[in-house]
Each structure stands twice: as C-alpha cells, then as structure tokens.
Image 1 (cartoon, rainbow, N blue to C red):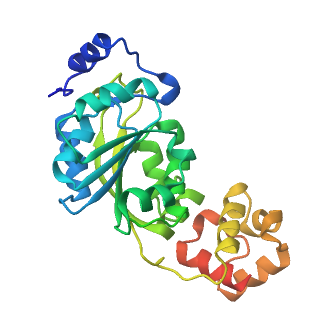
Image 2 (cartoon, rainbow, N blue to C red; image 1 turned 180 degrees about the vertical axis):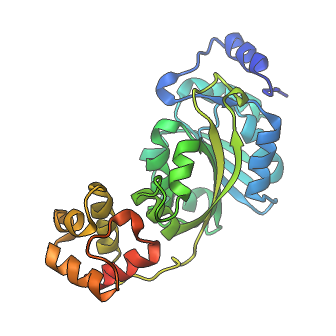
Length: 284
C-alpha cells in the first residue's frame, strides 16, 4: 500500500506516474500523520457513516476514511489523479472515486444515489481559492449533512469562527454560525504539506444544526441584510443597509428598527451578533 507520509514519498510517486502538482487546482498534499489523525478523529467515524471527501489528491486521507467509515465517495477535479487514486484505494471496496468539479455537482442527487436517506459527513482538505464557495454550497443547499471537517487557510478559518466586534467578523461569520457550530481543531504549519503553501492552515469542524439557533421570518431578507451590512463595512448599518437595493428598504426604516431594538443608529454591522441580525431582519 502506498505511503504518502513524507514529501519525498509523494514526490517520488508523482514522478513515477509522470504527474505534476497542479497550481490551478490549488494542490497541496498533506503528509503529516499527526494532523491526518486529528482530522479523522474530529469526524468521529464509525462503520455506519457515509462520507463525502472533496479533493482527495493522492489519497492519503481517503485511505484513513476508508478504514473507519462505511462508505466513502471522493470527488476529485483533476482527471490525472483518478488512476493513481484508484490504485491507492484498490484494497477497499467501500470507496468510489468521481472525477467532477464539486461546485458543479448536484449534491442532493449524489447523496440520494450513493447514500440513500442516510446522513453524511464531509471531510476535506479544501483548495484555498474556492474554500468559501464550497463551504456555503454545503451549508446553503440544506443537504443531509451532520458534520463538516475541513482543512482550510487559517486566515479563512479565523473569519468563519469570528464573533461580533472582531476585525475578522463578516458576512461569512454570521452565515456559518447560522447553519452550524464551528470549532477549531488544530493549526497546521506549511511544512505539513507538499508542496508547501505560503500560509498556515487550520482544521475546522462545523457541526451542522438540524434547525438554526435563531428563527427568522424571511430567510432571504435575513441574508440580504447581512450582505448589505458588510458590503460597505466602514459605513454605519443605516447607510450600508439603506443603500443595498436587494434589501428593499430605506435608511429611516433601518434607523427606526435599530431604535426599537435599543441599538444606536450609528452602529456598524460588525457590532451585531447573529441574534441581533435575526431580530433586525424580522422588524424590517
């Protein structure tokens, strides 16, 4: 069985198969066994679990998922890696490799076809350049996902987990906390990968809520309020939201709603909590 727990072994395997790291796909392959173990432990897998893996690369994480889970579907965009991947997991009958762009896959159909009605856990070492679109696709599509364990750029992880008032706090912070409970697992240095990225990474676990922690009358209005509030984050919420056409409101209405909630008309979006945004959205 292939051993990809060192930069040397990965490079040797790539060279042997005539492969090159594809920068366009953001390929940085994890080689650190301790980090690998923390990822799989965070997913809390057992033989009844169904797993979607995104971007398996050479399959180092795929192997560990196959050992612990009941069924693993790995979606890899790079067609050149499909044959090596299949070779890596050839001893496991519970793994299926799919050559697709995860952002173009109808996940609802995929889940129904491959997993039936069972809940799914997502485990992935995500490409940095499409982290946010993938995370929001997984959450917004309201799929039967129980947990998401992902390796992402540390800076992005800080934004996803930020609370109101922090400089990293933004629309993505509010959205992620609406759909899930985020938990930082471990920081990962550049030398844990081959090739080495220029930044630190972090393993993050999102425990997906069956029901959001706050209830809103109009979810579309709620998310438009968040987008408007952070679209011009240096402006007051009254100006930022009042100038955001999709929200379909005006500054006076925003000012009145803030006053009714006991909040200053000069407050900025970055000072509002998830609960504040829900209450303000309902008033508007």
